[in-house]
Image (tube, rainbow, N blue to C red; front, side):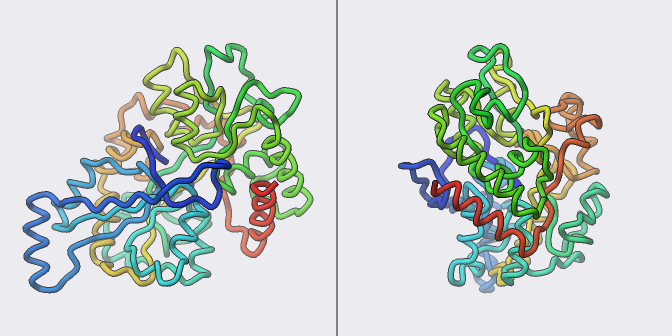
Length: 377
């Protein structure tokens, strides 16, 4: 997500380390004016010299404004939101000289968790302060990347696929070859600016695991991406929102995107737009909430995580993002139309062709080096 996201509004992210050539994104930081209730609570708390603000680092457009207001009222705090466009940006932002003391909660791609732990940027979660962890679906309550939810509480999950313009491409073949095979490129396209996801789907296209640590396979995927990037029909790399908006506006014919980003627009124009998971399969991702090691308002951070895990809140979040909820208790509040949407909740027949990202340990350096070479090529 992975994460990982990015809804209908225009997006401004942190300065990107990996963006479309010639473009730049600026940091978007919202210091919201709290509601009357939150303001009153803040004033009272301030007199006791307790923190009155919770600082959240999160993917752009990944939380509903009304949800923010409701949290501020319930916790009597102000929620300060800083957004980013890719996991690489998030990690750089969080790692920069003492930056982990500026944020309380980070919502990030789950595959980044072990890296952040190794860098000593996260604190173990105090489960006694997050009673709503009990609401998680069992498959997310002890994931392989963080057994027992020691460091993360899942936020949303989804898939990576292709969004395309049906009117421009009426005979579109649902294959990664539509952008990765020079002989089969179907139209102008945008690549996703997310290392594990973009390399992952390229590996799937070549018949390999998204979690391979075989240097030859990873480098082969890198070469395929370099060739795709050099194709005259490639419009470069972008984050989810930018890519979706380009297909919507007609600037691009195809884009590699996260399913929720695409579904927001597809649902508004089903006659023209579509989202598919290619025949070769793809990536399943989990975005998760984490507490920074030096969170200035840890108590407020725990309140935020627990708030998101409320059943009704979890359902509202999924309705807004169009991603699947990891919250089993929330499913009862999710509309049947969404639960039965295969682009949102993949059918059982598709699951064997999808892979979660796993922790690669030191082998992630191979992906880092390959990705750097792709972007610099």
